[in-house]
Image (tube, rainbow, N blue to C red; front, side):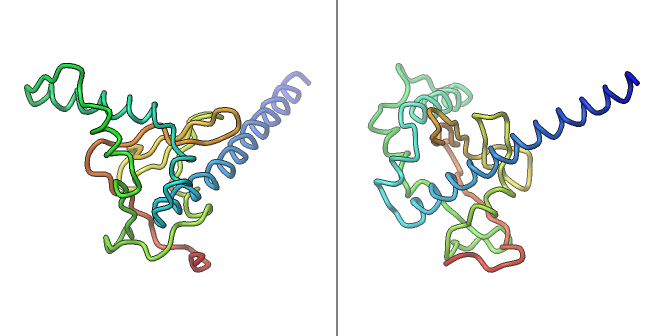
Amino acid sequence: MFRKVSAVALLALALVLGGCDLRVRADASQAIARFLKAVHEDDRAAFEAAIDRPALRSDLRDQLVDLGRANSVEVDGGPSEFALDRMISPEAFRLVEAKTGRALPTTPNAAEVAVLMKVRDRTHVCLGDPRNDRCLLSFTRKKGVWRLVGMPATNLRIEVPPATGSARKR
């Protein structure tokens, strides 16, 4: 009897946790698809609404300071906010087709984004690189809104696999 109750309880817990993951994945993938659309269309207002600029500055500053140290270069205070802000723009992102490396003609939809996404927990997801287990873009949900909080300082190239099933929305 105890084993049956335990098994049912574990199954219920797995379903609840799996359901949370599905809701997080669906919600975040829609937000990330909107972000990628803003990048693709160079929509500055939508881009700014989808990022957490202070968090991105901090992330990039830390990466650049570490990169400098690795190359025996020490800069007091790290890069300026002006330099960091120039790195945080729609032009910094390259959306390409995974097989050809060509620029995407259209932005990926939420279903395509969900395939590339990794759910870390209920408030943290990232857009992964399909070739390895590395996160390219990190997003955090605060007050119900997903925003970009982390990106690589160098070689930012987001490869999107071909659409499966239906054609990509145009």
